[in-house]
Figure 1 (cartoon, one colour):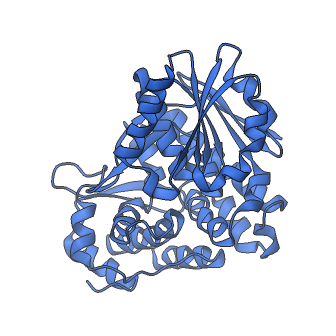
Figure 2 (cartoon, helix red, strand yellow):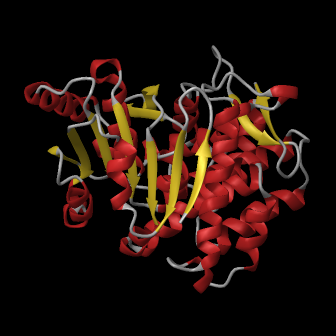
Length: 362
């Protein structure tokens, strides 16, 4: 097991290893007597170890829908009502068990119940381990877009049990690589080297290379969020936490257009290629770095093109992206490998041409 520490005003640890459920009581602390266990309904058969670790606590089990369809105001309200009926107080806690959507939803419920109760995340997917579970962002979706309602609420701890990765369908494991490769481009080029030199077996659960990739991606996120928890920006022009949104502006628009049937990591991969094409059109990076995006993402089995929706619909969704300021679109781009920056108010002709370059009809 390895432990990565997240500093700041509310410090906590991220534990990475195998068979970690036994750590849960210690992370929760002795003062927590009751726990609301929010888990993806389809993972009920995997939650036994968590239940066992909580045998000395009162547990309110709250199964929720699978994937992004869980991240609704109605599901959050159902959880709040259940907490209210059970009489949960500020000395009680929430534990999430599931992928990124369950983690986002459960974190939001914890952030808003009585204005904030303790939460511990037990992510079950690769994407949740390297993204949703770390950093304190929580949220739900609305008809206008993804994660437009949310709160910052840091967990008391995160248990990344790598044994759970072996329960994932292959396509879910591949999707999680989207956030990992993203971290290579914005901060840690060693991630890209490992991916580019990896064999197929190196990227399977239990392989040392995959374990190192998980640790490196989490370390990137910790470094960024510790310096800029609430996206106020970093020093010397660095975009701070916004850098973690590389590829996400188009990705979130694609997810909405596809009714969330496309996996988040797949959409992020497409979004990263789009951002790279946009950066080249703006004169920020060269063609070689754009091609490296395509090759690294394709190497792990992720899509690098998209033509499933009209540009006008995607543009309308991107205009309500959280990074936008007024009517001005803002994109996270690169000024070189591991040099993230912001492209504010790009020319619409660039936006259309970048979409054409990834296969869309602009």
